[in-house]
Length: 191
Image (cartoon, rainbow, N blue to C red; front, side, top):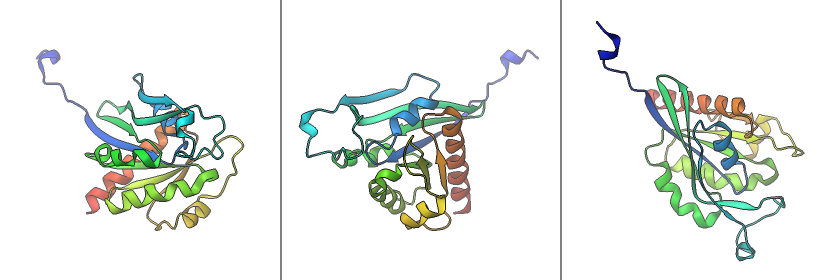
């Protein structure tokens, strides 16, 4: 029989959310790994955000996500991940509920220079019982801490994975996406 006449197996598509505080590297992470030009909803940071957005430690930041980032990566012929990056500022958190709808899991990207910005994201996913892992984005020049110290600082239970990544690096980001997919699928099958 001609193999072109056989039905083609469609890949499984999974939705992963990339969340975290303002300036943690979410847009960079989605862009570093997306096989399609990423959809970005970035706007210039203007004087209008002065006093609204905390730019402490982010002196070089010139743009900010105002809705979402979207990217796609094919892990293998049977598995495609759709990536949805959240905006990080408090004033855009109302969109998070819509962005996580249908997701199997999330990566909370953490900047240790602004660790306090991670607590709201941890609370958000814990209250929704959505599997997540912590990915410490190791910025150039930023202090580096052992994952155990980050876990303790965020008061995370032992079962929540904590890893380090470089959000600019495709391989590092891919490894984090595979890790959260495996963790989320294991969590769902254990339920």
